[in-house]
Amino acid sequence: MKISNSPIIHPVLFSIFFILFLYSYNGSLNKKVSSYDISSFMSILEKNSFEFDWLEINSKFKNEFYYNGGLVDVNISIERVMKFLNENKTELEKLAIEHNKIIKNHRVE
Image (cartoon, rainbow, N blue to C red; front, side, top):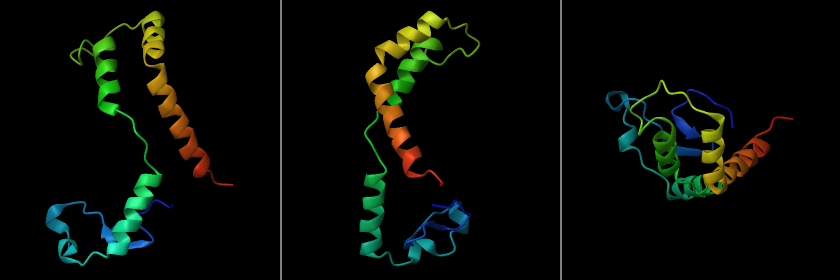
């Protein structure tokens, strides 16, 4: 899909709009939404989604390396990074596999 500034989220789903600013919505909230478009949008969303607890891994990352997010100027040893990667290997591998799928599906040839 091409990235554009169009207010239409997906080129096939004409009744699904993205509102940048609520005060400039130009009546988008009053437009009729096609049930077909909703169904198509949900199918696309489901097809391009996967289960991943971003908040959990982010929380673990902050706790391990940044003292609960309170400090950012922290020396981080390679051993601590390796420990974190090993402890969260399953979740991070799943994330990498899903990102690789997305890259392969959107590759321009």
